[in-house]
Image 1: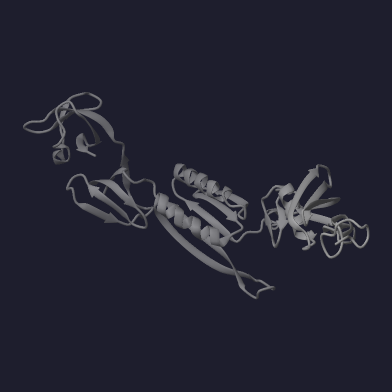
Image 2: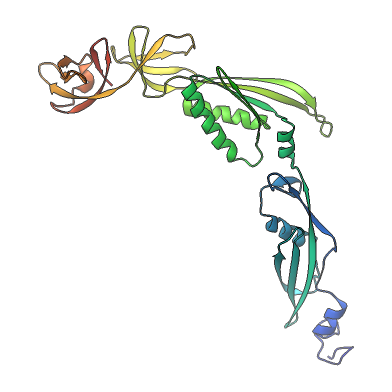
Length: 325
């Protein structure tokens, strides 16, 4: 069968590949294309939300979404290149087959980039927030917890710090996500142990969904000691073995388990462990004082009974008494 127009062998609907291509374009593309780019953080509006992707990737997704491919062609391949500029130029090449013949069509489009503030940057500019992370505790501990919070926030594209307030008792960090604040408080409790308290307060109604919107005060009070710390409290020497809402430890005097709740008015002293050498093992275990190197009795010698003479162990000192940690 021959092409009804040029007489060449027909390949589709009574036409050769070239004549068919003349009457049936391989693809169509709108003349006007544009993307929204945040002028502060360079996020791009894709679909229904702002996202952190490369602008070229966003433009390619836009082109593929707007492109209308003729279904009469087989084995479609698309290649897109960009020429950088204020409004980039896209060079689009599409190939497909009619029968055994490969055909290519090309086009170019300018993609206008509209710059505005994304939702999160708008909130930052307006100091808008949904939650306040209230970090409390000893200064050094608060600094450590704050550093961890910042690391976690950086991992999330949709969470921003909108305001910070330094206080005598700690730090307030305002963020734009109350759900993230709740999850972060849980992580802090698991990682550091401490006291938490979350209060919510209605501040608006979403007109689009009619849902009540809340702001949270998320308090985290970090303990002044960590797991494995040794503290003197209530005339006892306690090695902390776990921290959470409550504190669990082992008494170095009695070898019994101790449980208590932390209160900021508690009077305690943290004891720093030091390494010392066992000078004698029989009849009693003796260690060398870390400063004057005089032999002294190890109060809880059962803890070190597996150690031998000249071995090094870790102890704490309290009123010139030595306790193995």
